[in-house]
Image 1 (cartoon, rainbow, N blue to C red):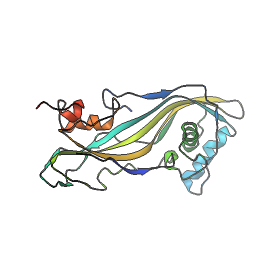
Image 2: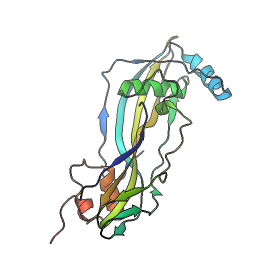
Image 3: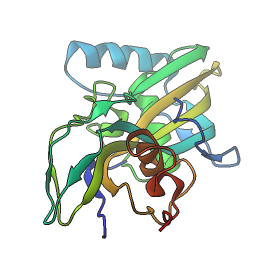
Image 4: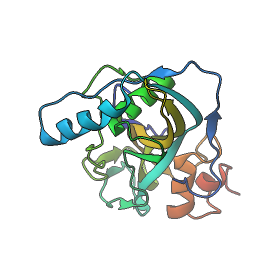
Length: 231
């Protein structure tokens, strides 16, 4: 039976469960230009005032970690011939967040730092002030905002995940002041369905589907081991 994975949403741009593998990159890329945040709300004005302490600065990013993280999983649900809707609710396992921590030096504005990170990794419009990736007020994904339907019998598991990005940075302000920090956000909010008695197929170690299978199907299930069962 073919299981199709669906994406709930994607923006114009932590620990994972045990056994995860991280995709990292380090140094060597050109420094990304810092940009000020603009806006009209009190929070935006405060952000703009912070950014002013480091106008015309540059960021250098390293230890960039981009990985898919399981955010929620439902209990396995057995369906007979013809399938049907999956009605078990997903329970939360990981809450993604958008945040910047300044470890030393002047604070340069969280949204400006995140736009720089988005431009560094690609896939975002760093000049887009409404970019979800750089929105520190971004809402947490709703794990149960939709429903999945399967065709055919079996024991099924519904799960959610995000593609999370975390990175360290150093920056130099236009006046020569230096600082450092760490930023995190996420690129994609997605979901998937698997069948416990079938191997998942081509997936990487630490894939959210494997983690979901271990939790809801059992660690020895064909889905969790990604191997066909005996008999």
